Image 1 (tube, protein in one colour):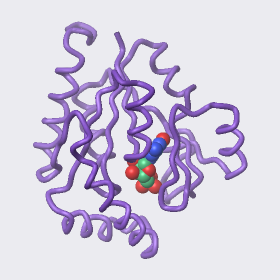
Image 2 (cartoon, helix red, strand yellow):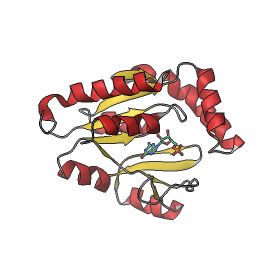
Image 3 (tube, rainbow, N blue to C red):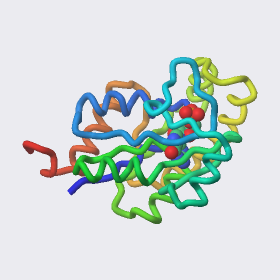
Length: 190
Ligand code: 5GP
């Protein structure tokens, strides 16, 4: 039985890095590529990092019911395409969604069996430093993301599991443990 894993938490907390490490440890995991209306950052590829859509394209796909969940975040829209999820589940492989908190709440309603993991920073200050330090977003965007992060951090106890991303290797190991335990004997060869 394939399973859905939702990895959520504030921007800058290290969800992407943790998921990369998780997939090295549990290679069967597929990653659902989200759609977004934000512009690609340097080095990001259409269809790999995101499906980059125009506002009109996104709107149309919302109207057509193509999203499992979607949310507005920092003035842009982000969503999980049903086709992405179904492509992974049809192969019988467990799938990871990396999404913000509003989307995670929607998935909790529509897919109550999905395993939800909240990634937390060791402190709000550390999150601030990481968001500023990674240098991928404008100062205005960083400010907006930090404001949103306050609300997101307050939601941490809504989730099945919480992993504090202090030492990266420890957090990655904890995440892999949660995933392996949830998959139980369903992994190939297990
Ligand atoms: P970023 O612009 O930094 O790539 O992403 C901003 C936020 O949107 C992050 O918290 C990221 O996890 C979240 N996000 C990425 N894809 C999706 C999605 O498909 N749905 C939702 N709800 N959030 C997403």
